[in-house]
Length: 196
Image 1: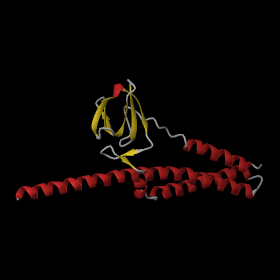
Image 2: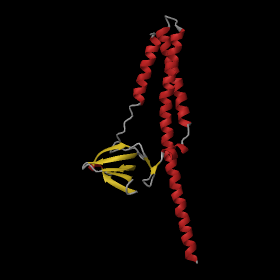
Image 3: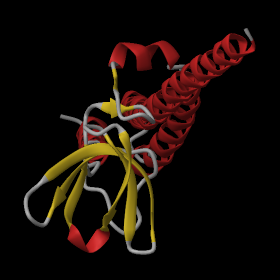
Image 4: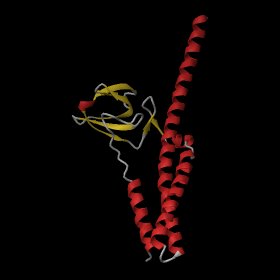
């Protein structure tokens, strides 16, 4: 097996492990706003919801079961982990099909293109160093292609995750606007009925 293939496979495997190493644990003191989470209390009670913020020793979140804003003392919380489901600002689950309807490919394409350029540049540099003496153009092109592809895949995956997060926010915002419009219509109808 030639040098380029061995190096390419090793780099690709390293990038894959790096890309899959995302933690689902959320910091109690500095949590990610709008994360859909499972909160485990010190007494073992579990609460699901969406985080708003952490301040003054309290975590403010929307409790999915109660569907209302609540707060918890941070020192009473054992752990916080991200969920694979997503809540809106009222604590209701947003189906993934609804989220996907809001998803765009803007960051996926932008990050993927950048990763391709960075990976190809790294492959070119590696080719110059390793294959300058051998003048093995096939191995050099293999290294450039493998690293370019690995960079495009890794950065494209990161861009896709960012696009998904944007789509979750867009779905939440759209649902919030629907609720506001319904409340406005109810108030208008109430005012109309009171005038009669």
